[in-house]
Length: 364
Ligand SMILES: O=C(O)C(=O)C[C@]1(C(=O)O)C=C[C@@H](O)C=C1
Image 1 (cartoon, rainbow, N blue to C red):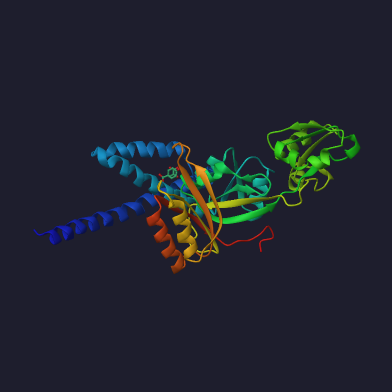
Image 2: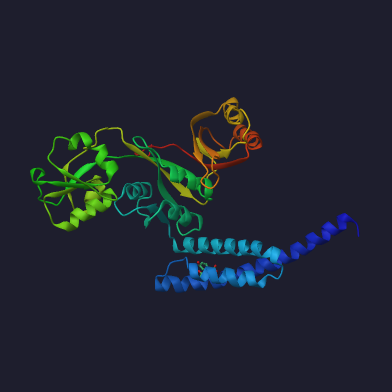
């Protein structure tokens, strides 16, 4: 048998296996539908991490070739991800993951970007990324940078490590207010609770007032505490949306020193968006003289405006850095694809993080 015959024979075998797998996939999904009906009837969540672990362990043990075990585990992981996707869509569920607590700025941003959708709080930024990556949430909303305090470095690091795409950026005006129990008067307030950043943003308003400032883990928790403490001499600094959430009244509005306090949030999705008027990249370059300059030259020489570039150290590789770049233009254009191919050849690693259309807080 010559090499071409061998190739054809192997492919014929693959076709046969694929046909069997298609039938088996349909059979599996019929069973998944039954599981879904049970979950719907009993109000259970789609994700069952314990069951998935069991499926993976049992699956790996069935593969006799140890070299293939890891790959089969990946097949099963992907299969269950597809199954979760299917179930979530059947349920019409669209959960948005955000970090922190209800009433925090991330929650406010998530509710404005996705009004009426189910919102789910996660403790850490990383948990939000994980929820988006494994399909527990259809989207994630995390802060990316603040005009006052700068970038959120941890989020940049997670973008490098996780398989999540940026599909939107949203600018939220951060306005701080003094909130207290209904009926409390400004002259009665003695103690003010809030996150240290919010406190520093309101320093001008606070100075000269005889108030004790008490740092709190975040603005929403401070507001929650005020709503529960029953003490009219205490107040919190937080957003007006948070006041509404916890039944507090606004004693003083817009008390932040700078009127220009904006936090940019990113919307994460597992499904990349291919078009937009902005896109962003992360990349590493070799330790050669001029390597970074060359990368920037490739972007610029193709006519793309580099709106921002930052470097971050790679946590597990001391003194190694990756670069984050934000570029104006549509990454799906032929010109962008050529630029990206050239850039990929010049960089050690390159990842297109996402594409989006710029819009502001009013949705323009
Ligand atoms: O067994 C379940 O609970 C399912 O929903 C099925 C399934 C799977 O496809 O195997 C999918 C999602 C769950 O996280 C666990 C397993």
